[in-house]
Length: 256
Image (cartoon, rainbow, N blue to C red; front, side):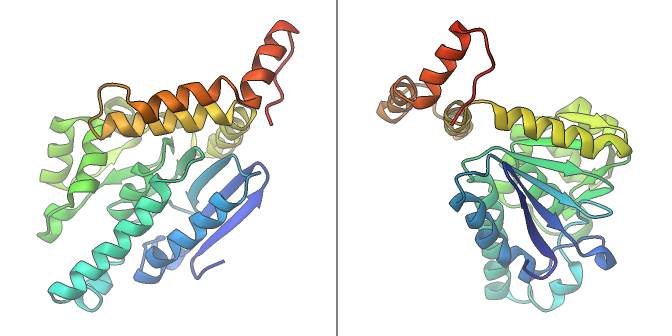
């Protein structure tokens, strides 16, 4: 546990819980700074196959704006604060295992940025999304903007950033901001089912897919030696041997 963040491990699943309900789970500086170490704990445990990120009563209302006149006052302080946020977000997006954001209530600003750093996003039908720089007179960073554009396309990214308006879950689903929407009471059940399904599949496939998709999103359009090595290594892996054996024996695979 680190302040208002805690890591709950129930193999093969880990859950990063945002728990600051008095501030609608808004992230302060210490929470952003704690993210890399918490993610490193997940990365260091080979038995963890999926990370779920969720809030308590709500996902996250974003960054704690009350710190903007202290922690983010002056050029050097602003740059340092942004570097800490970027390091936290990059730690989540760079994790090798699949990541899922389970979103209830508000998912705004930095909270939305955190959700976008996850591979998949499940939302309750009461969820509300928004990114508010246009309400604050600041410019959204390039890496954060790219994640938004990758998810929803340029036109919707412009509308979200130009207006700062909130979007409901139905619109978020339609534009690709989230993968699925479920009744609020059923979100935990769906999250458990999906993490179980992912954990039962090949980690070799998932890690390879995550790496290659990341390269595509960064502009790579043709295989290189590193990508070829990912292919080649999969065919000599224990997962491949088990997958083929299970198929021939007409049983479910038991991946290591």
